[in-house]
Amino acid sequence: MAKHKLQPDNWVDQYADYLFNYAVSRVSDAEIAKDLVQETFFAGLNSAKNFKGDAAERTWLVSILKRKVIDHYRKINSKKGKAEVRMNYNSDSEAEGDWLEQQVADPYSKDGDNVLENEELGSAIQDCITKLPQKQAMVFKLKTIQGMSTEDVCNELDINPSNLWVMIHRARTALMGCLNENWF
Image (cartoon, rainbow, N blue to C red; front, top):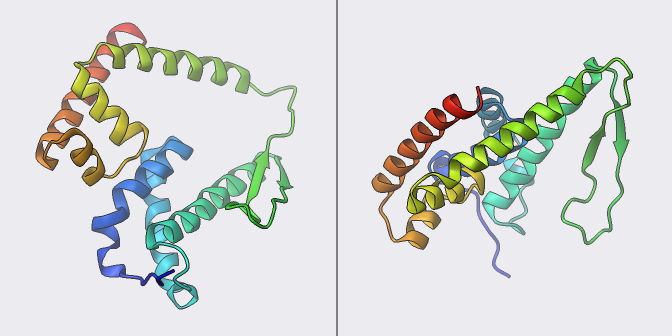
């Protein structure tokens, strides 16, 4: 297998969108996701000497980002009296040694309301997506929800990047209007 090499000068252009979508899908906050991606790039630069080339550059950056997301939740949860649980994985597992957070039951917590509200919001978003024109919905799902790269979405749907971003903008605008009417 050929060894991969790091090219930090290209990270922002090649991986920022993918890493941002990955992070925002896990932390549900765009500003925090941006910070985590920035921390990932910084950590990647600092630990570049440890890169062995066994994995693709993007895979390596995603593994750093996973740790940043876990650290983010560990920091939040330590402030809320949450417990930390170490999960052991098989040595052939991709997630070997990952830390997971588990919430300790709190009888005074109001999280139950948040769970119900999030389910309602998720359902409202799905309903609004079904009302989008088919190609807009497809572009939005592939790029925003599934986190595919701009290049992959463009190749799959045979569109150019400018067209993709116009469709995503229109989809977001339509979704916001739909949610304002039907959910808020």
